[in-house]
Image (cartoon, rainbow, N blue to C red):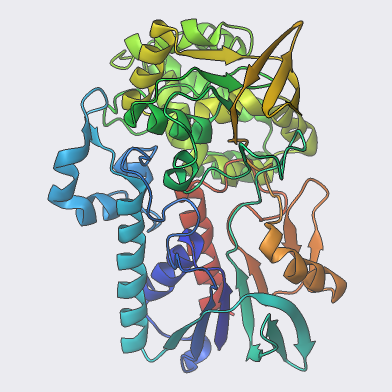
Length: 478
């Protein structure tokens, strides 16, 4: 068996680690072959999110949700060890390190996995090239890279990461506009300390930019521009509780018993979870459904005050959205998926909350008047060396605009488009109607956000780790 892994970020690390954790015996007693990782970027194993950057750009989840080894909640925490002591979020009670340090964890895990695979008899290598084409050649697949080289393989795993941030207002090429904020250090090098900055977006990427501006002592006005105006929810302090009802096992039981899973079934599991804790589901549901209507500043203030609130509702969703969610999503009918997509902003706000230390920075800047949140934005235009922002019935201007809009789920990264077109044209894969890529050949696998028909949180580390583990199992039994 020869395995080609296209992409060298967290998904590739998860796959290598999962392959190494398995006992090393090839299917039917066959011999191990070659594993080739294709990654042209200098940020091998770290990808776009976890390369070198400012120390203010922090990991956004507690250690238990950042393990790249599926099912081992302590894998990352064990690696972190004493290094986390200097990075504890006092409100959360958990170490939240700079993302560049998490990148070191990914690199360490990849290197250990490659060494283990080598001991099992695999030849593991990294090729610094971009794969642009794939085709069949008898019983094998042939990959062509941008430098016109050919590589044969028996199996292909796409681990290419998320899409490119969209330029919603057509501002590319204008001086003062940044199309992609990462690395944030490079972006802020072009922002004057007293400049009037508008950040397009109000999710976690926007929070990274905002908090880093504050860490640098930015003196100018800052505005978060968003169509919805919804800020991420805030992490609550972990209480060590594991859900008893909202679990993959219970979802499987329901699916086997009824032959299907509906959104109402998942709601029923959550209802039972809350009832066991003596909590009112209807009250919790009403709070969630009010996310897009409630004033974002009031909700932020309320949620900071509730970091130690003993109620479990949001804690359960924040855990299970990443662990159970991607699995349950595939079992839901399209009508239920469509309902969840209509509430995408609320769902991502709850499932991917901001850490308390960052929430506190936002609250401080909002209270001081330096930061404001503008909802209902429908146009941003370059005018006389500045940018005019139109939202609702009013206007404002900005000197600098930073695009912090997240790519849509299942979007194809720009660098991977030629390869995806090739896979589709040769019949090795198909484009899914709701986005992403679906393998049409058992030798092709997709891990991460590009997975066709996947949920909108497959790019989370737990989701990626789960997919990597499943792919490793499939490869070892192929």
